[in-house]
Length: 183
Image (cartoon, rainbow, N blue to C red):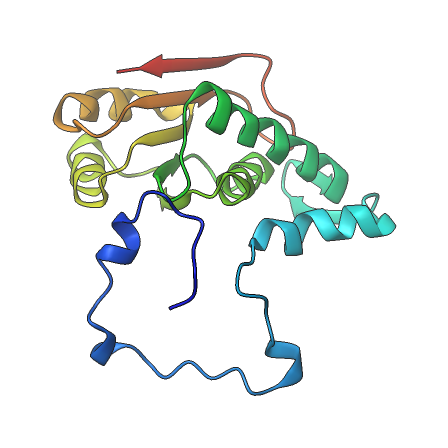
């Protein structure tokens, strides 16, 4: 396994034994990747820095979102994750919200910050959320405020969940309010 920037090694430590791994082959030239790679850089930052920021990155029922809009939101959220919530590389982050551009920005933010996303369906209730958070030892959560009730109900059974950021609204823009709930 190649070097990782993760200081929290929970995910690596809980992989199956190497004997159960598939054979990883990257023989084709287009499959030659550097030893360390951040997918957010490749999928989001590079289109913006190469002058394609005006292009549509996502289309949803709420409208469309350009690469620049997604990039800006992801960077803002990554800052919240690292500076305000204390996320360390390798920490697991619960994502809870509808499938929209803001959830995509949350996913990219977690990748930029070096976290590991654990996305959940909006239909999950407190019991299922508690099971997921405790099994994955999730420390942080980004959640749509409309889904806060079940996450709040799960928190007493989730000792590893340190902080939660709730956001509101739908579509491609970050809501005007973000509520940080520390444990």
